[in-house]
Image (cartoon, rainbow, N blue to C red; front, top):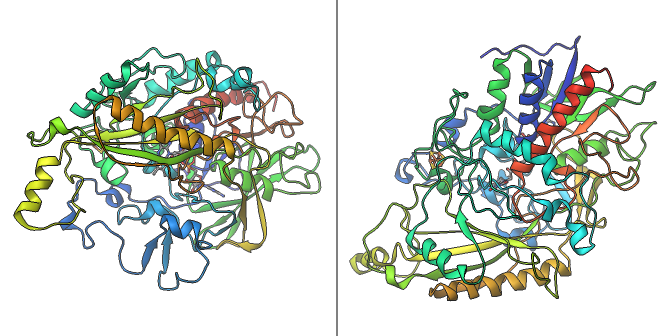
Length: 585
Ligand SMILES: Cc1cc2nc3c(=O)[nH]c(=O)nc-3n(C[C@H](O)[C@H](O)[C@H](O)COP(=O)(O)OP(=O)(O)OC[C@H]3O[C@@H](n4cnc5c(N)ncnc54)[C@H](O)[C@@H]3O)c2cc1C
Ligand code: SF4
């Protein structure tokens, strides 16, 4: 693979900040247009196969897959009771991780919270600072949005419509599907458009029962739409087809890259064009500006290891550091011309921050499966998705927008129930008898985009590189709490309709941030007074500046965002390349 060196004397056609879903896609699209692109990534390039070790057995790991001594991953209470991770009580842990980092396989992928502090209201902020960012460990659920989301204001009067419709984005969703691969089953639902699916996975017995049980309620359960290639991709030599090892569900990540990740799916192929220069360990701290033209001139970054500072130049700058880091970077890029931060004449950078609420869930048992022989159910890259049904044809009195459920069931390598009391032969027999009969699901709901939910820069706290930390001013509102109460009710109602024995049902809402679907801090719109970007994710204020990650979202929808991030980014980068060719940036 060609790896050109950084050239400080060169003016690149485009400098991209961040190498996750958004930055990787920008690199792919722009290099395929023949542009000379520099990609800056704050984290390391890890030997990712060695980190993930997808097929390692627990007994081959010194800590059975857990964290080594001296390391600690925050639990739910620690996010809510203490001021994580700076309060007393954590002194013994040299390495502190977000709740996702609770595993030997992920400890080098997620950030050490001590080096990367943040302040303000409770928020479980999960970050992956390494080549590929969070795509190395994402949950793979790859859903499309529809005009029920893009034009949600037309339906309920709340918030703003997106400056794009489904018909604008649909061709780009198709391109993403074909280039990266996705598995699923067509359902012809107007509110959850189908993708161009590869071979689907199979539902387990209890999942089929649930699917049939809720049909009479007009509700839909479908196979997990995973951003995974089940048929293989002839055009990509870095990725294998899925062998159904289920390791991605058990541990996170896929070391043969059947599950999409940005390095093997996008960045390595972009490097093969010879048009991409990748520089890892490069922490962008400011987007520089040409005082004469007011345009972005390049990026000032610090080498994360040597602490040396550099400035690189580009005809266009593309911010793709993930929703919250991108907002931070725009706010950090203050100058005489832009005293409130770059692209922020509207005052909306950092605001309208939204995501998904989660927590309410149900656990049930298909009693007819007790004592049945085991089936192979966890060799799948995902189980099922139960689609949105609220506020489509009907209107709920207490809340607007909707939610969907992710769930799973069936026989698995590590069956449920092993943590229940008991020991010896009778205990083992009991676990075996019940193993394939449990089923569970939890909801993900839209958090409304509100101006008063925002992030800004902390005036005192700085990260390891001396860069001001992000401060959160964010909490769920009444709409989310009413929705959460409804999630619990409907979860139970559907399990009962399917004839399952209810084992446990909860309406506990998890801390803000738990969904890892942060969105909306530099939203798109037609009006520069109330939005940061236009429909091509181009700054209204600074023509050659683009923000191509989840920051651009106008609302969160309840569908997972990554496939939409990449479809929008592809469309914006096609536009950028066209504008650059016309010398119009
Ligand atoms: C456990 C888990 C499960 C998930 N499950 C799903 C799912 O099922 N479906 C779904 O749609 N989404 C899921 N997500 C979310 C998904 O991973 C994100 O939506 C996606 O990765 C966002 O892409 P991004 O490029 O915006 O950000 P990232 O992937 O986070 O990439 C951002 C990159 O920018 C780099 N960066 C940050 N700051 C700087 C800086 N100052 N200078 C240089 N580089 C910088 C970071 O190091 C990182 O590599 C999940 C995430 C996690 C962690
Ligand atoms: S099930 Fe498929 S995507 Fe998941 S780890 Fe196995 S091969 Fe990779």
